[in-house]
Length: 333
Picture 1 (cartoon, helix red, strand yellow):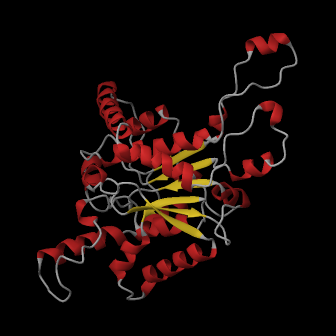
Picture 2 (tube, one colour):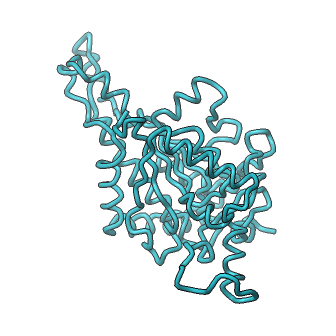
Picture 3 (cartoon, one colour):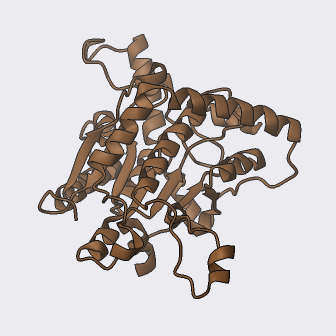
C-alpha cells in the first residue's frame, strides 16, 4: 500500500489517524432520529466515530514503536510540483478573511505581550515579567503529508499554523543589534533576528523527504518521535509552559495526551465531538474526557472558537477549537 493510499484511509498502517474527512463533521440534531437502525445516517455516524476514537496505538511512538519519516533521495521535479501547489494553497489562505481573523485571534486571545522595548529600555520594570509570558515553542502534530495526498487540507492547515507563527513572532520584536565593543564588530555583525527565538517542531510518521524539505523552507524543524517533548523531565514541562500545540486532525488518544501536558495554547478537535461519540458509556475514552475536563477547569482554560470553521467547504478546519490557559483566576498567567 502506498503512502498516498495509506493517508487516504481513516487509520494509517502506522497507527496515526486523520479525521479531516467529511464523515467527521459535527452531529446535526436536525438530521435523523435516535433509535433508527440501518439508515444512511447511522452508517455515516459509525464511520465518524471510528475515525474520532481510533487508534490507541497513536501513543506508541513515545515508546519506540513509531514509524519514522522516510529517508531517501528527492525527486526534484516532484518536489517542484508539490512546492508550487503548497505555495498556491498558502497564498490562497493568506488572501482570505479567515487568515486575518486567525491572526487577530492570536493577538487578542493568546495572552502574548507586546513586542519588547528598545535595547536602551530593556531594563525597565516589568520587562522580565513580560518575557515570561512570551510563547517560545510551537509543536505541530498529525498535520499529514503534503506530497502523498490528493486532499488540500494539509496544505491549508499548514497555511493556518504559519499565520499563527507569524503573529507569535511579532511579540518577539524586530531585529535588534547586539552591543558592540568596537566599531569593526559593529560594521561586520548583522542584527539579531529575535523571531528565531520561536522554536517550531513537527512530527508525523507519514512525512516524506519532500514534506520535510518543504517544511524546512518555512523554518519548521521535523523531528524523530523520540525527540517530541513529553512531561517526563522538568525541562519538557517547562517547554510546554509557553507553547502552542497544533494538531488539526488527530485521534482522541493524541488529543488527550498533549492536552494533559497543559500547554499555553492547545489547538485541536473539540472534546465535545468525542463526548458525543462515547455517549457516557464509560470505559477508557470516557475517563480521558473527564480528565481533560478537570484540567480545563483547574488550569482555567478558555475555549476560543476557530474563525470560520466552515472555511474551505468544512473539511479543513471542521471541529477545530482553541483552548488558552488563563490560570486559576481566569487571567493571563
